[in-house]
Image (cartoon, rainbow, N blue to C red):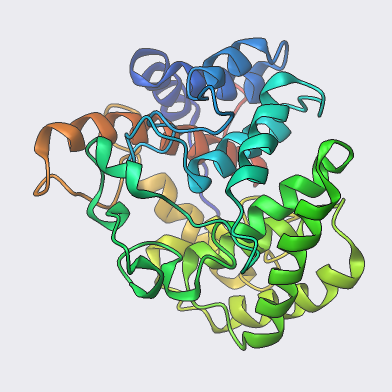
Length: 313
């Protein structure tokens, strides 16, 4: 039986967002539901950007350091692109400036975090060490960050190509081409999601996307269905997502699980927990994540046509 989020539970989620979500997540959801001016979302996003142009300051709730990092800057630039902010906007120019200054030219990748993450509490998987490039503890570290965050960042640079130094794109693209050639399967959930975002970037060159698309689809087919970090809906958040056909047999169950995961207060909650590391910091992160996850849940369910938006007859 096809399952829908009822009108009552949809309204409960909206109340949860209005009362408990960050201004950024509220503004992003308002744009989806009501359209209108992107300026409130842009103003909220600006509070997470540093003077050096990069993003930090807890935009990624598990990483509360004020310092700019590649992973958080990728999120910031992703949201700027989502808001259709033009390339000559100061926030876009700042992010590109930071990325240009922090690319590892020798490898063509952006190290996902730096030592300044230790300036504030964070989840244990975001701990910095000098040998982290060989560590499995940091997301993306095991493969040298070639997909997470580099693939997604490269896709965003294609979107803003007119304002990006050509040598920056050339260096990152060369590193990614090598990564594609050397990779049989993308095994990490986060690597796979970053690669999917690049494949779905219309501005990316076809001679890069074709081999990456083949690798991504092969990896989606081989990926463990029960991986909470890359559920069918995470891989195919819309019916037109590249991976939608590959996970189509799992989408109904994933949608049902998402609907059932809504909490009595109307919001969704993380499946992870690092309160054992720092209970107070985790409570703050959990609060911010709940708004983020509730927004994403509503956006995904609406994209798949699984919300009863019309009042019952």
